[in-house]
Image (cartoon, rainbow, N blue to C red; front, top):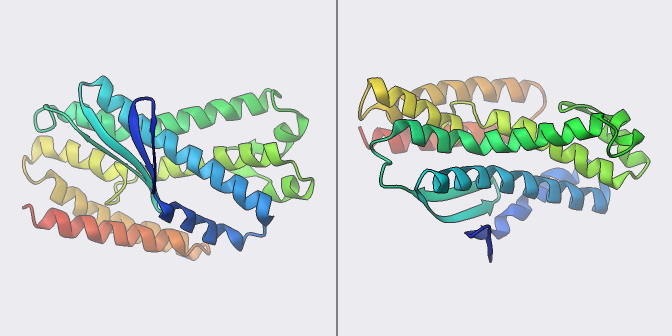
Length: 231
């Protein structure tokens, strides 16, 4: 595990992050493409976790560490108001994807404005429509990195707001439910998350994805088991 400090936070990069490369090798990106994809994924996850960390610190909390690992990242933080201020907890949970998506949309805006050249503007049509095959064919490595970063950040950022256990959306929903059902918000959020996870898993699986459905269901089951023990 690599440990360093960034913006005053203790950052841990776990070796399991390299597991992501296994799921990219089959895409035929080549060595440079895989390396750039991993770099874009790392930057995206790092920005996401820093969104949580910066917000927690700004609201008076303390951040123990930020860890980047094989299935994303985790920010470990605490605050004296954690059990009193549901609004602040909601903000911290939402801030990861908020910063990640906002920065990616900003980069996309620069691309569409022609800042990174004609090829980037041509092949990065939208955050969801990026012609990586054409980019790779012409070996446009900067454009490949930009397109990958935009796609990962927007797609993963939005998916993270789904109310599935283990994702930020589950924490956000639990906070909202806690207002009306003190002490039971997390459990009911976990139940909803399990249902959403099954639906999302089916949707992704029917479109040829295998990794995402497994992760969604495993996350949801793990959160449901943990939440049930606290009821």
